[in-house]
Image (cartoon, rainbow, N blue to C red):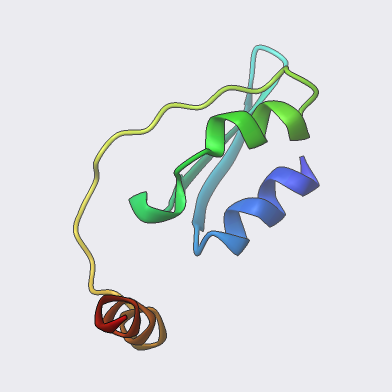
Length: 77
């Protein structure tokens, strides 16, 4: 569970809720879509194939300035 939480944080995720249901851990978090590519494979690897996830759109948000700068610099190249 700790490696999953750490990975979500490294992807600029905001953990909203952690609960337990039917013996399973449930984590609800907001994570930018751009950070979620290839997440399914990594999550299965971290959980030894036991974890799964669902993703639904929630809201738009302003990009942090440091990320904005990286995007702009990437477009200039």
